[in-house]
Amino acid sequence: MKRVLIVEDQADIRELIRMTLEIEDFDIHEAENGDLGLEAARKLKPDLVLLDVMMPGSLDGFGVCAHIKADAALKRMKVVILSAKGQDNDKNQGKKAGADGYLTKPFSPKQLLEMVTKQLG
Image 1 (tube, rainbow, N blue to C red):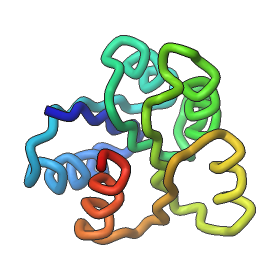
Image 2: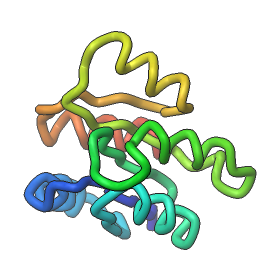
Image 3: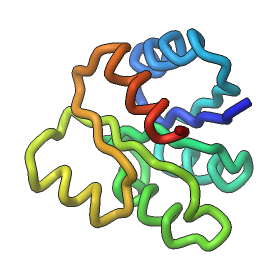
Image 4: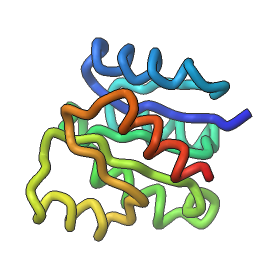
């Protein structure tokens, strides 16, 4: 069973993502900010991290992604940015941080499942 970590500060969006992923057989975990998300990634070692960008705390999504990709024990972990920030410079910032994918909000459940399936392929 593939393990997925959702790092998103808005509870309603976390719930929508979780409900979408529950269609498939994933072991789903959640964190409500970047600091807790990085801690959970280190502890759980998920196969995939779905990561919001704009969150409270000392780390935004780009920072969490960069920490994951810089850590030898975690760098193989797939990271997908889920963000309302959809400009090319935002996507480039995600790429520079090491993100494996970028999905702009709002996205459909189908788009989310396609991205997750592609990353976990």
